[in-house]
Amino acid sequence: MAAAMGRADVSRVGARIGARHRVGRDALGGGRRARRASVAPLRASAEDASASAGASCAPIEPRLDAVVRTLPIQEVLHRCLDELREGTSLVLQAPPGAGKTTTLPLAMLLSRPEWLGDDGVIVVLEPRRLAARAAATRMAEILGEPVGKTVGYRVRFDSKISRDTRIEVVTEGILARRLQQDPGLENVKAVVFDEFHERSLDADLCLALATDVRAALRPDLRLVVMSATLGQVGPAAADLLGSSETSAYSESATERKKKKRAPLVASEGRAFPVRTEYVGAPGRGRFDLQNAVVSAVGIALDEHPHADGGDILVFLPGAREINDAVAALRRNEPRVKPELVLPLHGGLSREDQASALKAAPPGSRRVVVSTPIAESSLTIPGVRLVVDSGLRKTPRFDARKGMTRLDVARVSVASADQRRGRAGRVAPGTCYRLWSETTHASLPADTPPEISSADLAPLALNLAAWGGGAALADPAA
Image (cartoon, rainbow, N blue to C red):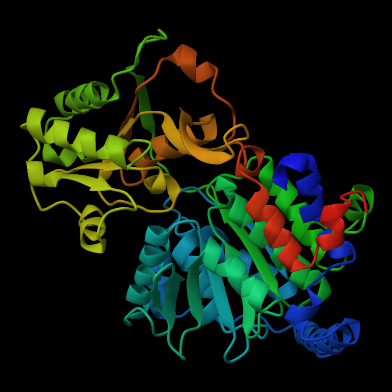
C-alpha cells in the first residue's frame, strides 16, 4: 500500500484526515450524533474552565521547589504554567539537563490548576523504554514515593500504574494504541510530548492524532511539545498546536496561519564552556571505530589524568559497537577499572542500566559507552568529557526488498552540539569528535524526520484504523 502512495501523499493524509474522518465510528460507539453528544459537555466544561482562568496557579510545593532552584528550567517554569492556565498549547525548548522532563509535569500537577481537576491525568510521552522508566523513577523520588503511586509508567511488557496515578510516562506505541482505543482520552487532561526533536514516525503520528482529538472532541485538552532543540520544528509545532485549538485540518495552510500561534518558550540553560577537539582524519578510508574510541579515550585521560577531571561519556550508534568498544577499553585502558567501563543501551537488564546512571565512587572515574539515548533523554552524572563517534542508526525502507533496515549514518550538527553539551553541565568540559572539521562542515543542520525514510505501511494502516479510509483512497479529497 505504501509503495503506491508517495510520502507527500501520506503526509497530506496525516494532516488532512480530520476533514471528514475525524474519529472512526466504531471507536466512538456511534455516528455523528454520538460525536456531537460527546463534544457538547466537553465544550461546556472547557468554557467553564476558561471562565475561571483568572485564578492563578498555586505556588510550587516545597518538595519540588527545592529541586527546581538547582535547575535552569526555573527561569521559565512559572511562565509555562501561566501559558497552560490561559491556553491549551505550549512549545518548550530547553537544553539537555535543564530539568524539563521531570520538572514541568510535576509542576503541572502540584500547582493544582483548575483545568486539571482533582483526578485528571497527565500523560508524558518518551521515545524509549529506558527513558520512560528513568523519568518516572526520578519524579517519584522527588515526591518521596514509590513508582506506581502518584507517578507511574507504561512501556511494552512492563507497567507500574495504580488507581492513584496522576502522571503516566508512556512510550510512543502505548500512546498510539490508547488514542485508537479511547479517542476521547477519558480523564486525561494533558499530553506532554518529550524529545520531539527526534521526529520519530510514531511521535509524529501521536501528535497528529492528539491534535485531531482536541479539534473534534476535547477542546480542553492541553498539548505540550518539549525538546532540547527544535530549530525549524519549533515554529511549525507552535503553528500546528495553535491551529488545532479551534479548527480542523481541513483548513488551508493560509487559513491556519491566520489562527494564533501556540506560545513558544525557550530556556537558555546554564551550560559551562566546552572545548571541542577534532581527532578524526579527513580522508574517506575505512574507519576503525573501535580503535578510534580507545585512542580518543586515551587522549582524554592524558589531558585530564585525575579523577576530578570527570567521567567520560562515549557516543556510539548501537549495541554491537558499544559491546565491542567496552571490551576493547577494558583490555587496553588500565587507567580505568574494568568494572567502571559501562555500557548503556536498551538491550541491557534494568540493573545494568541503573549502574550506568549512578555516580562514580569517590576517587574513581567511569567511562560510560552509550547509544544516542544519553544525548538528551537521560542525564548521566559527573560527565565532563565526551567522545563522540558522530554516528547514529536510522531505519530506512528498502523498496526493492520490501524491508526496513538499520543504517549507520552521520549525525546532524544539532545532534552533535547536544552531545557536546553533555560535557558542560556541571563544569567546563571537553568534547572529542571522531571526525574532521572538513567533515563537520558537510553535516546536515538537523536530523531528518523518520517519515522521510521509513516504511510508511504501518502509518497508512494506523490512519485507516483512525477513520481515514476514503482519504487514503483519494489523498486529494
